Image (cartoon, rainbow, N blue to C red; front, side, top):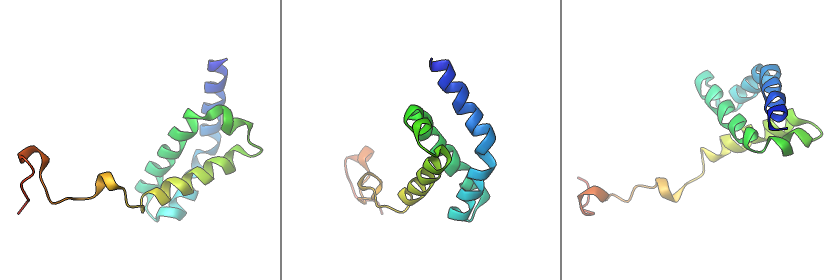
Length: 95
C-alpha cells in the first residue's frame, strides 16, 4: 500500500510541478526561490500525502501549503533572533 501512495505522489509531482512552480513564482518573484518553495511544500505534502490525496482538490491543498510556507519566511522565529552573544565563546558579546 505504501508503494501505491508513493507512486500516486510521484504522478502528482510530475503532472503539477510546473503549475506549482508558477504559483510559487507569483509569491516570491524569484525563479530560484520559487523552486525552493515548491520543494519545501511538496516535502510537507509527501509527509501527509494520505490526507492531501483525500482532499477534494489536492493541487489546491498543495497551493495553500505554498502560501503557508512562503508566509513562514516572514515570521519572526525566536530561534533565529540574534542575541549578540557568541555561544561557543562563553556568551561574550560580539563586536
